[in-house]
Image (cartoon, rainbow, N blue to C red; front, side):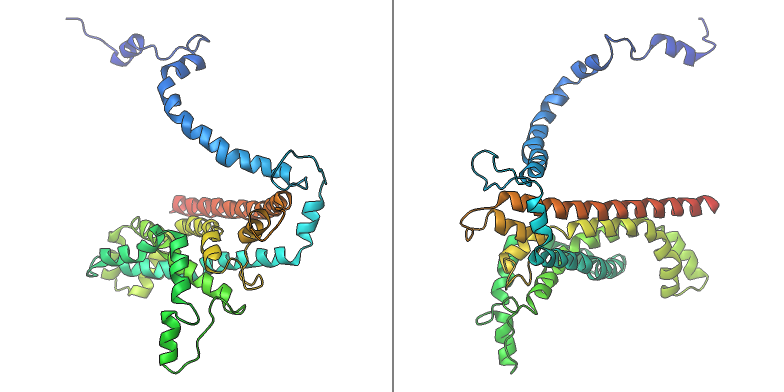
Length: 329
């Protein structure tokens, strides 16, 4: 029996690998995996029709005085953008939108971290039940959550105000008063989104080896010292990503605002999405202004894009710094 001196060389001779010729190049790979492209094609078509095309089309609509019907004929240039930039109501809605973002970063994220730390304790009885209870609002329909809280917070017959009245207190017009409407909607949205942020923190906590806590406990470290010296440094790279995801998610508050207040009263709880919706689709508008709504949406999208890019750069810098510290160790 012949002995092969170099088995790897023999395998290379048997399997020459994919040919680099034009005949066996890109077209042959497409033909080989044609069924993959067939199954992916419906998703790509729907993505183009309902996501990419509306985004690209809105850029063009912003330059026209268009009501959503008929051809684009009345070209007005940058007038829609100037009107949106000079409208105090737009900037008020813009500021309210970032109040939602601020609440998600400085209230929802720390509160979710606190719950994650408590529910990450393996000795806590029924912790999985508590996790499910906190996560249930996330999978609930946002519009249904808004309608339910609208009933609960009703000034006249809402259960919350009924209890306040029985306690001898005056009823609170949570959604009809301009001083409380925005804070109330933000509080409901913070409660609804708490579960998904908690899951992010729990996933990050699972990456920390338990041996580190055991070693620190043997050395006499207390819970606060372990949190400060072990948990916080190891969570830092994940924290940047979690805060980025929470920040981006906070801009999807249209459903909850529209169902609870529709931006009222007098624009007190208006956000950019409800502002755009009112000009483009609200039945109180006799002539919809799709062009103006598209211009306002593009202005807001550009600002969000810039903020997101800045956050991505910060996340990359934090990850590089963490990698450098790990390499130094």
